Image (cartoon, rainbow, N blue to C red):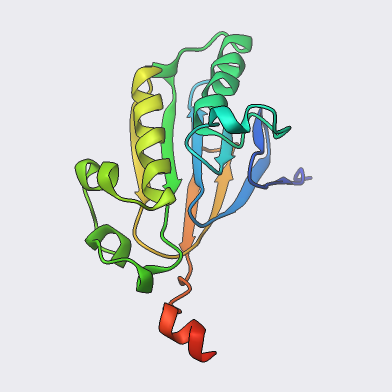
Length: 187
């Protein structure tokens, strides 16, 4: 008799780490999801962060640590320590950081084209800042990115299977409404 698969849905700010027949799902726009999977131990987890960092002005705001890239990495490090594993043992995948309003952006990376890290660093879009933060924090933690689907435009539906480490990404459309369309009430 086959065992059933448990589904866990991550909202912005959520974090999950575990094992077994679990599929973690999330929906991303400008947010970023980082998944980690240990192929030998068959454990792993995923986060869904909203912003690159909590600013000083937000220090009193009561939100989960998982809302911010710089605060979610300690959650991963603690999970790895509890399981006696190391960053280099994991397959890491990064998704998200899409621009949801490409009609309002003049930069190539905001128009759905591939951009490099230098372009992302100077980009004013929060999705670009989220991707840069994920890359920086993963490198600082000793993690290597195995694959990624980042930037461009539009949403992403992400499913991460903890049983086998597979991650699926289904891309959605962006909100192509321009400022002129919004003013005219058309699309």
